[in-house]
Amino acid sequence: MKSATTVLIVDDDREIRELIGLYLKNEGYDVLQAANGEEALEQVKSRPVDLIVLDRMMPGMDGVQVCIRLREEHRMPIIMLTAKAQDMDKIEGLSVGADDYVTKPFNPLELVARIKAQAPTLPDVPGGGRGRGDHPAAASHHRPGPPPRLGRTAGSASHSPGV
Image (cartoon, rainbow, N blue to C red; front, side, top):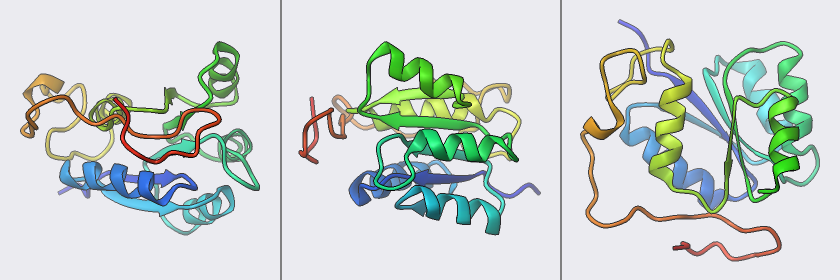
């Protein structure tokens, strides 16, 4: 039996790490967290990581620098999650090795769907990814009403849910 897919969430905002972690754990993923780029690189050195959700704007080593360092030795999918939403920011993130780019505020259910789309050949998880006969609309969880949109926008210090 395969083990669950391990996702490393790298963000300096603890609330965002915990929120994403909650959604991923509910889908059967193993979740690791890092508060900065240096911690992320240490986590990847010390244990197997299948996919990384990587904040771009962090103190110290930013997400672009982390992505460049990871790509020197690793091929796991990397999804950048950031408030930097300009076209050139997205192009830069993708050009340094990110496989996908999600802007804040974000919908946690969409992020989970993007993780599943990036990981179709990784270990099976409940509601698995593309290529296993699953469709995002067939997910076993459904919350009434619109899902929350969370995160900071560029220049905002707010951590409250957006609309």
